[in-house]
Length: 374
Image (cartoon, rainbow, N blue to C red; front, top):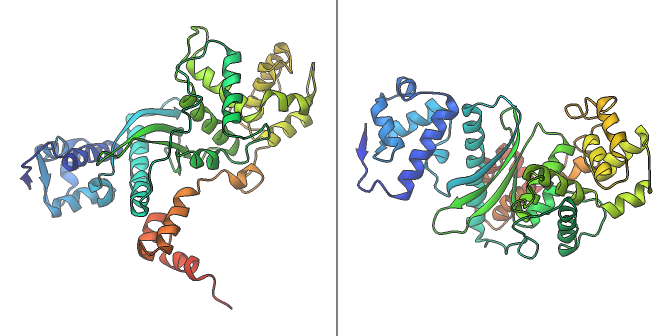
C-alpha cells in the first residue's frame, strides 16, 4: 500500500499531499470513489494519509493514482511550486469548486514546466519593476489616472497604444500563461511560492477562450493590482479602481483627446469601432473610458448602454481577430523562447522540448534544422 514517511514535514511530501488532494477535487472524486478506481487496490484511509503527508504511496500505487486522476506523474511529484497564494479568479457566475480545482491544477502543471526551464538556464529573479510607482492606496479617480500616467512615464512607454500587453508584462518579470481553463473562467492571477528558498514570483493566466479585447483589459487590470494596493475612499471600490487604471493605461487621456476632439456630445458607430480597434479594448470599455475622461457626457453613455450598446458586455461588436492587428501580438512567448534557448545550448533534449511545448517531436526537430528542401 505504501510506506510510512519518516519525516512527514518534509517539503516534498507536503507538496505531494496537496497535489493529490487538488487532483482529486479536479476529478470530482471522494476518497472512497478514488480508491475504487485505483489499480493496484488502495484504501480510502491510505489515500487520506497520502493527502495529509503521513504516508507516501509505493511506485505502483503512485502510477495507479496518476492514471485514475488523469494527471501526470510530474504534476504529482514536482516540487518547484509550493503554493499559489492570493489567487484572484476572473470568473462568471456559477463556477464550482471542481472548476476552481481544475483551473488551479492546470496553472500548477504549466508553472512547474516554466520554473524548471528557468532553473535549467540559471535565470535570476528580476528587480521589482513597480518599486518606483507602487502605492498603498488612492483617494480619487483622478489619482488612479495619474498612477497610470506615472507608470507609463517610468517605463518610457509614451502615450501611444500598447502593441502587446502580454509582452509588456513578460518583459517586466510577470509570467503570463495562456491555458484552456474551465469555460466559466476568463483567467486568474496569484503569487507563486517556490521551493528551495527562491523568491516568490507572479503569474497571470488568461483563457484561450477569451477574446483579444478582454485579454488586454484583464492584463491591464492585473497590472493595476501590482501598482495600487487599495482604496482610501469608501466610494471607490478596489475592483472598479483597477478597471479605471486599466482604461487609463490602455487609452491615455491626452492621446484620446487628440483622436476624438474636445466637448463631444455624441459619437458615431464608425468612430467608436475605430477607437476600440486602435487602442485594443472593447467597445463597452471604450464608452466608459470616454465618459471617465469627460469626452462624452454621462447621459450619452447611459443612453448607449440602454439601447444599441446593451449587448456589448457579452457580445463584442467587430471583434479583433486572432492573427490580425493586436491579435497578432497578444500571445505569451517567453516560455517558448526559453525552451528553444535551452535546446540550442544543449541543456535539454529535443524530446524534453517536445514534452514541455506539448508538440510532436518531428515539429521540434524541424524547428532545429529548418524545413527540408523539397
